[in-house]
Image (cartoon, rainbow, N blue to C red; front, side, top):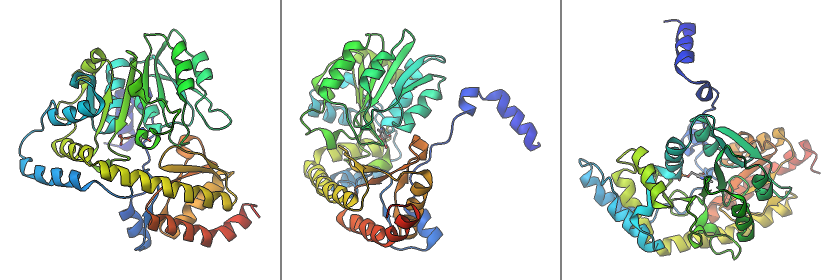
Length: 382
Ligand SMILES: Cc1ncc(COP(=O)(O)O)c(C=O)c1O
C-alpha cells in the first residue's frame, strides 16, 4: 500500500481532534544522552522526579511481589486503598487508583467529557491534561496566567459558561511552580456551579502541604471536586506509574466503570503500599528538596536570572527568548545536565530545572559556571 493510501485510510478513521494532537515529549532519558554523547556523568533535572530514588520499603514490597507475577493484580487494590483511606480518613469508595495521576485524568476524560464540552483551565499548565481532554473532543478554553505566573482564578471564574463541564487546576502548577492560595480557591469555588467538575491536580502536594495558605483539598469536601495525587514525585515511583484520586463516591464509582480493571498493576500497588509506610524516606526527600531549592534559587539569582518562586521540586527561569532557552538546554546537555525547555508549554522563553541531589546540583552549578560566560555574551546578558 502506498504512503498516500495509508494516509488516506488514517484520515478517514481518525477524528480531526485526534489527528491534530501532538505526541507528548518527555524529558530526555539518561541512557539516550549517554549513548549519543558518550558521557558518564549525567544529571537528569528534567522531569521533577525524586532524586533520592524509591523508598527501600517500596523496593522490598515490589521484590517480594515478583513471585506473584503469574497472578492478576487485586482489581480492588484492597491493601493500597486501605492504606490511603487510613492515612487520609476516607472510605475506600472515595478513592480511585490509576496508572499515574494521568491515568486517572484519562478516566475522567472518558467518563465525563463528551465531544464539544467546554473544559476550562489556564495557559501554561500541565500539558498532559490538554492532550487528554482534547483526545475526547473537548473544547479547551484557557485563560492567561497573572503577571507573577499564577493561575488567574478570577479570570477563570469569569470564563465559566453554561457549556463548561470541567475546570482543571494544577496546584501547585507545573511548569511554573506557583500555587493558588486558600483564599483564591475559596473565591473561585464561590463561582463554580455544582454541575461543573473541578479537577484539582495536586501532583506536588507533599512539597506544598506545609505552606500555611496552601489549600489542602482534604480540608474541603466539595461534591464536585476530584483531587488527584501521585506516587511519581515525592514518593519516587514514577517508573511504576501509580496515582490516586479522591472525591464523592458517586463520581468515583463511575470512574471505576471506565477504568481498565487491573490498573495499577500488581507491582505498582505493592510499591505504593511500601512507599506510604516509609515516612522517613518522605521526610528525607522533603529535606533534600527544601535545602537544595534554596541553594539553587540563590545561585540562579546571583547569576542574574529571575527564578519564579516555586512550591515544588523544580524551578522555572526566564531566559528571554526561545533561542536562549535552546542554547541553555543544549550547552548543558553537552556537560551531561538535562534540563527542560518549555516550548511545549507555550513558554519558549523559559526553562525548568528540577531539584536533584547535592551532587547533581553541584554538577548543574559547575556546568552553568562553565557555559555562562559565552552564553551571556551571545544573549546580551553582560
Ligand atoms: C501537574 C502534574 N500533574 C500530573 C503529572 C503526572 O503525574 P503521574 O506520573 O502521576 O501521571 C505531572 C507530571 O509531571 C504533573 O506535573
